[in-house]
Image (cartoon, rainbow, N blue to C red):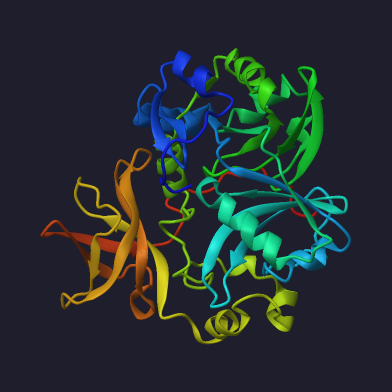
Length: 373
């Protein structure tokens, strides 16, 4: 999801966005809408109603073959053999030194796995998978599929009227549905911290689906600008910024992606380093920061301790429309990562006071299965 490269191809909804006034920018090799009515308005609309995002730049892969679950465990730290059917799992493609090649979502669909990877890294990811998985494992790059995300507290209300039954899904669960004359793969997931859905739909049917969603006045098209500010408020890392090959899962606070059995057995790339950090702690940790004043700090700004020594850098920062204040994420020395720690941030020769705070900045509102159900 990092901005890189020249525009190489048009996505299925390219003209659809332009017809609706989307301001297009180069993103991950495509032209993508950064906003329609303004980032602030789109952000707050999604927090209160339902926002429709086009994320068709992401890579959609179908991985199948005998023992594909065990094969994936050689490259990813998740417990895929125990993963239940139609359930999603967040995982990480790891390098031999424990660095993060990419983060992804993997859904078991019977004996196959439907995997969504980041747009700017998908070609490299496919290469890593093809070279790292056994020859009998087949990787299909689903280039003809579009990917939409409907997010917000009214998303289920809007979408269930179009695709009956989707409201029965719970967080991190997916299923195939048939509506509007086409088959869609729909999961209850997203990247905003809100309830919502991600919809894989054939590219030729994407516009009809988007039109059906926007026929409801509770839904509006939302650009990548608000997607970024929403995920920052939700404390979710952005690949190429908050996580990359220079960060490990433990540094990034993504310990949950390393399942209990895998911690005991190892057997994934970088296991020695990662398991060592789980036991002893990493040198640096990703933290949330509340920044005093009104001016946001941006990626690359230097984080200082009380004596003015550099202890880390900002990886994501901006104005929080929900909190009406600047917020940021970054890496600091582990000894200064405790909540309420007072720090300073240097940006363009100007100092800002900041305080370490718990993530997320805005509570997640996922639609989870009731406890005991």
